[in-house]
Amino acid sequence: MRWRKGFSLVELLVVVSTIALLMSVLLPALMRTRRQAQNVIGQSNLKQWGACYSMYANDWEGSAPRGWWQNSASGLQVKHTDYWMEALRPYYGNEHHLRCCPRAIKPGSELRPGYYTGQLGALVGWGTFPGEPGKPSSWWPSVTAGDYGSYGMNAWICNPPADAPRFQNHNVAKNNWRNFIIKGASQIPLLGDEQWIDCWPEVEDPVPPCDGEPWGPYANYGHMVRVCLNRHDGYANWVFMDYSVKSVGLKGLWKLKWHRNYDVDLVPPEEEFNTAGDGWMRKFTDELK
Image (cartoon, rainbow, N blue to C red; front, top):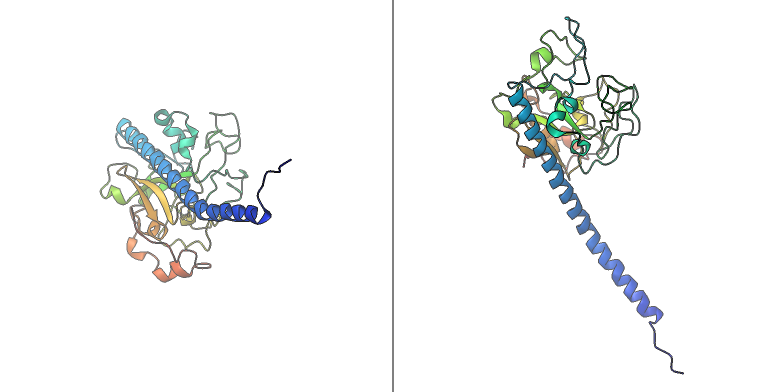
């Protein structure tokens, strides 16, 4: 009987080593390609949001959604229909995935008073509001149960009642844009990558000390931490008030015109960005593309 000659141990080891080498070369390229594809999908989502806001503005004579405010002197209460997620639903249907950046696929682990989104990071969304879907949430009646996502609105654009008082430290009467007919709209962020459903950034907000830094207790941490998220290789994706979509270098987030009285001349110096925490922002840029 003649025996067939098989692979020797040395030959087998050479084949396995070659495959391992090829995988080590190809895997990073495949990961980059995957991230680029996710970025394209995310920008496509934001373009759809720009179209939704445009239709909303046309139907409401240029007015923005009412958003969040403290109860007004006239007794008006915040309702779950006032937030952008519900106000724009007639234009995007119930396509929950449109509220999600494809890179931020992990929902917040907890949603309860004092925690809001639980464990946070650059790739974590704001979880799912509990309760009967489509009704005011059992956790927070001002939002709609069943909603989830990882995009948020620039709350300085909302149009609350004229007699709404200051909300926390946010002077909505003085700073809010309120409508979509705005000069310099291409520099005003509308909706994009966030840790929460909204934000009130200020130019003096501190630079986050680490990538994916949780935004912490609701009232006493700068809101820029909610948007300074390294989801797209040093960039965050936003749709602007002219309905264009841009990738913003993380340092450039401070240079955008978030509200009427936001002074871009007071942007932190480069050294502050480069030395915050372990210097994680040193390699990033301030460009828009």
